[in-house]
Amino acid sequence: MKMKIPCALVLLIFANLTAISAQNTFSNIPVEVTGLPYSFDDINGSHKIDYLIESAYKIVSTAQQSGFVNFRINKFVYDFKGDGSLVLSTYYSYDRTPAGGNSYYPANPNAVYNWTLQPSYHQHLGVNCSLDRYDDIAISQAKLNEMRKDPSLGKVYDILLSVAQDMDYDYNKVGIPVKFVTPAPLTGVCDDYAGLLIKRLTDARISGVSNITKVSGLNHSWVTLRYNGRLLYLDATWFDENVIDETGTVVHTPYKDPRNMTFDNDIFTNHGKHHLPNNIP
Image 1 (spheres, rainbow, N blue to C red):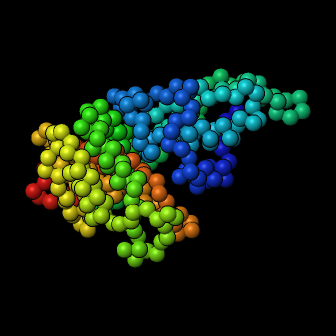
Image 2 (image 1 turned 120 degrees about the vertical axis):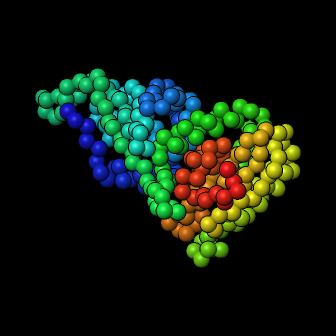
């Protein structure tokens, strides 16, 4: 029997994704990664990647668990494709299950539900920029997880996260009426995010960090710094999710997109939010 996921259920789950924890709460279920030279432990930590497991679990188990005997999820497989898309497969099984009257659904020891997620793009400076290539996000997270093992870069990350946690984007300044939670957090636009990040980085006096600089391009601001001679790109604005809910309230949820703390110029600029001036390598 083929598994059927009700459309209404899928829409309901997608509508509530922001309320789903990014933490993988199903650690007893194996997770495999194909298409990239990383394990799930390597790419774990980004909201964009992590919430998918819990979403897939809810989609499959909510649709089937109550009606099938000994229903269980056996493993998840993240399959990253070369075009930036991602196929998340949920392998599950169940025993022979009553189907009404004297009939039964036969046992299925290795059923699978495939969830295909396509990347999104937009035109930016005359080129096709990725907002949502899943391979870019996963690779960036793997590199970020490795970077954070360095004590100095771990401190840089903590400060970047603190700015995203402490500040909300003030859409009122760009003409979109919004309200904020109470008590009101720090509010501002990209220039304010960058300014606060520079202040906290400078005050921390992190070993190996120098040349902390605000960079502006195409009505956006972010920060670069030198760490042991390498150029690190930091964007606290887009590290934050900056979501407005249905009541017009700014939702305070740091998004933790790993592409916004990187030594990788190509991924940082192709994220679609940045245009580096000519003097920035």
